[in-house]
Amino acid sequence: MSTSTASPSTNSPKPIHVDIAGKAIDLPVVVGSENEHAIDISHLRSATGYITLDDGFGNTGSCSSAITYIDGEAGILRYRGIPIEQLAEHSTFTETALLLMYGELPTKEKLNKFRGLLIQHEMLHEGLRQMFDGFPASGHPMAILSAMINAVSCYHPDVMQMEDDATFKSAAARLMSKVRTIAAAAYKTSIGHPIVYPRPELPYCANFLHMMYSLPNQPYEPDPDIVRALDLILILHADHEQNCSTSTVRMVGSSGANLFASCAAGVCALWGPLHGGANAAVISMLKYIIDNKIDLKDYIAKVKDKDSHIRLMGFGHRVYKNYDPRAKILKGQADKVLKKLGVAHDPMLELAQRLEEVALSDSYFVDRHLYPNVDFYSGIIMRALGIPVEMFTVMFSIGRMPGWIAHWKEQHDDANSRIFRPRQVYTGHTLRDYVPMDNR
Ligand code: CMC
Image (cartoon, rainbow, N blue to C red; front, top):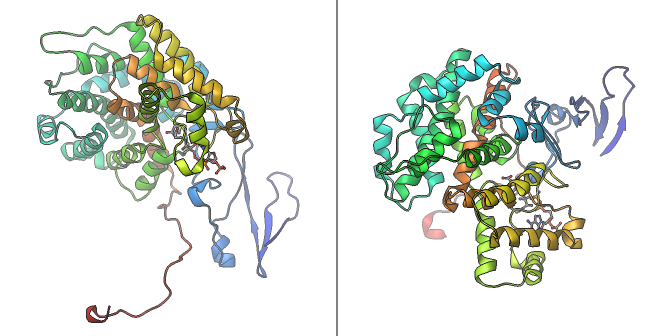
């Protein structure tokens, strides 16, 4: 394959001229608002017979999107243009959700209206509540969460069709609100406690903590600093452009599947330890090192040894080749939360800080640009807030919900959107005959 640039154009970049096995095509260049350049190959196969192959999609843009911008080399993350650091300092999870879904910070009136919808939809239908009795106590809350999100749509068939903005907004609020009630109910079921009903006067995170920790005979009054720490965690997880779970939501949504089915699929994709499951894996790793009194240098040596198949959990990222800006914020927050809770020394936080120090002065990590990611410190904070490890990835799901909803909406509203259908390079048998059972 030989490439050269075609004739110059004053306004848009020159198309890339590609000549493959005697067949030529000019591939348009698409430029994003942050000057990111992409080659549009959508007509490559029809013109040349060739497809592109990009295992793991490391070099493939699956869509254009105006929601979240990441510069992985510089460690920049912005929602709708606003730096994550500013949102972390000034915004709330509910406000950030509206920013992601609608593209602008809401007015006070719009925010209050949406809060009203969250309250309106916070209860579970009695039929849904009874479904919790059918799950075994040992059932993983991520399995329960994805099953229950799909089940919600059975009770609200209007969410199958999004004909106008009011229906969408109501469905989005229903999803964001119910996911929090479902998560807390899944936790209560897993420990054999009665499910606690939401309290409409409480804001989003305080209400969640109430449903998690109140007992019928013992109300839980959430501390404002703890509520704020949880709000911050959710804001930091709210979107991250085309990651594995969001791409899954868009993939499922591209077939025309409804918002609930698409987001339930997102929960399943998030569950894996290389994605949202990493926050729980970090705690298991730190616990393993502490319990077995493992020397850090020995552990790092194991991580570097490819045959061990051990990774330093909470480290590395497909996009960030610099410190994950979310991890930077959470690292500072971990200290604050622990102090607030009166924990002078947390062995896990101290170990995490030492691990980071050792790793960042080791050429293996430096050369590969492996830095702490969002999951490295988030688990330490959630653990300090009393959230059980099995619930960590559920917390990630609650946080990521506005992002998934925003991406589903963006795709749904795009008149040019097509069903996602990647191709493959087939490497199996060529034509052969069926062999009858007796001859095998
Ligand atoms: N520990 C040890 N080595 C690593 C790690 C790690 N955590 N991450 C990457 N590497 C090495 C990898 O072995 C490879 O080395 P080499 O070039 O010698 O073969 C090189 O770095 C590039 O790694 P990769 O696997 O090609 O990178 P990727 O972009 O496919 O994977 C990742 C990204 C996040 C899955 C990976 O870094 C990883 O497994 N990290 C640990 C799990 C984790 O923390 N996941 C949370 C990600 S952030 C939140 C989220 O997305 O949910």
